[in-house]
Image (spheres, helix red, strand yellow):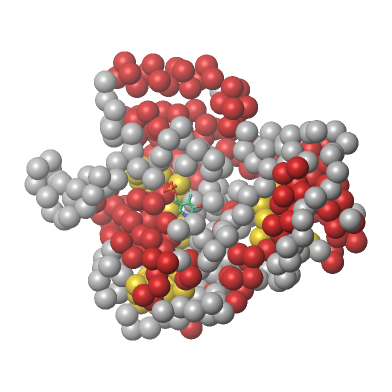
Length: 374
Ligand SMILES: *Cc1c(COP(=O)(O)O)cnc(C)c1O
């Protein structure tokens, strides 16, 4: 959207060295410390460390909290994608249409099954997979479509005669699953984070849920009788116990993220001179604001300037998936998916952790404005 110039990002020492972090997990865990300690003790005392009652309790609490029939706990968001695509029968020779602008796991899960990721461009106003472009990319070999609810905003679902799996790693709580299945990640920095790797699949399809549950434990049913070749995608009891401590707070954390996003929008609207340099992504009622992303002229210079002012930022994602070296054999060239490539050059996530204060946010927007006033 904006050219990527190479400003020096300088600027003098900030007036007050405030620190604004992207994700303050220490604060989150300090407030829950007694319950987290109790969870460790409970699992130690139970002697059951993989699967079992702690995992089953988490699965039913998660399904109830998110309004879906089935939640299957798995080992990570990556394995949630892998297990779901396996359960849908995706394999060699198949194509799966997906977004070029996501965390690598989205396309990696497709490729690991021997299938071909087919990338369709993103909508520049949301950076989510463009539904019409996705439909246009469907062929006779398309086995599934895999949109990502990027940054916490629900992607528009394509209207196509193949199963749709939502990569909902960043959008927990935005909606019950709208398609065949939705996959979650509980990577520590996600809106609901474990203290290690963990994930889940949500679905209203009992047969699909059963198939994923089978595959997560090597397809064995009963034990040592393998009906299918699966993997070890199981959720640890300890992570389930930690997630049970945090889950009851998720709704309040989401409210806080939405309030923070609304305040950023007000602050940017009150700085009209910034409109020449900064663009905001489209707002939507279901958005759970895993990230608050701006599109910034001279993004990398702005980033250095903010770092110098004690403000952490992140780039999600610096290069689009269709141009990753491991996908060179797919034959995409620079320029193939221009909206995704432009976003990789100008998207910048600014802090939206539930611990952020209104004063922190004023400081962030003030420092952004100072960069472009130079
Ligand atoms: C975090 C994330 C994943 C992977 O989750 P892990 O739990 O780290 O394996 C997949 N897709 C998206 C969009 C993510 O943000």
